[in-house]
Image (cartoon, rainbow, N blue to C red; front, side):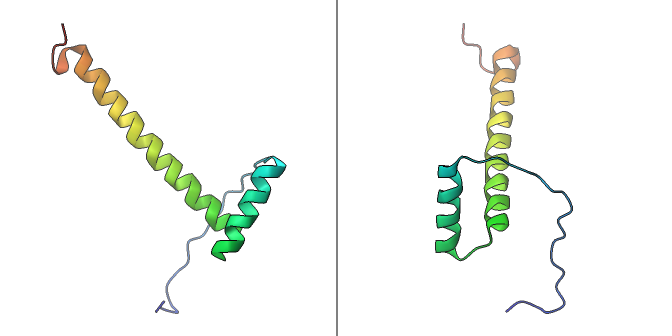
Length: 75
């Protein structure tokens, strides 16, 4: 059960995104099925994508470091 005194996150940055009709229709359908506010779903999707890209970029950086003589020699 949620504590009535818990503070909710405050979102202060507004972002405008243009979507195709199909993207918007799918977004509405999914959020309706989940009974979730559209903005909450979009924030979750952005977080998931950013986490995924950060992991990929870190792995890419590690791979490049290994190929620059800091790791296994592939010659």
